[in-house]
Length: 225
Image (cartoon, rainbow, N blue to C red):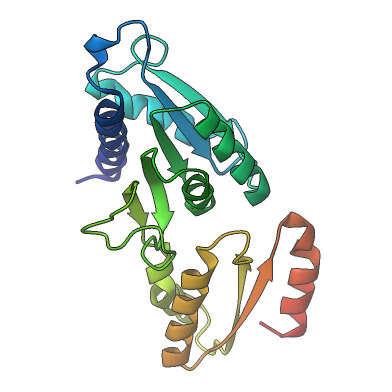
């Protein structure tokens, strides 16, 4: 399967999950012709973002078109976890049928906002470790969707770095604070486990936002990463 086909399949899968959950919560669309099913989409970034068009294209093969037989409430956090919480609560007040949560901070915010409206991860990194689902096979609760594998690639990242720098001894990891993004914990933990096996000293540097970048890179430079 080519990369383009995988991306299309992923879009269709997210769309299928969303459409199925909308139907399950709202009943048959034909029974309520005056009210369009409504999806809330919470994106962990600022507009414009590629996910918006990708999501629309993922719904089209399933016969759903925004504004015709489906309403979509788009919300963008700008990468701010505090804004994610407020926007998730706003979508709940709008009584959307499903919330599609783009990336881990959006999933967490949606879960805090509601335990009844279905949530589709699109995707979330390490959802089991983050406490979003009971297991990948049986998510439980009101959350389903896609899982990212970034947290499990720490060993491969260090392997590639060592191929470029054979005498690699110290590596810094720049990540969000756990309070900002719960994905940071499994991400850093996986990197730490891989570094221990490889005999590399790892220096995690956690930030709350772009305002911390200057000090973070100063710290990494002093550590001679």
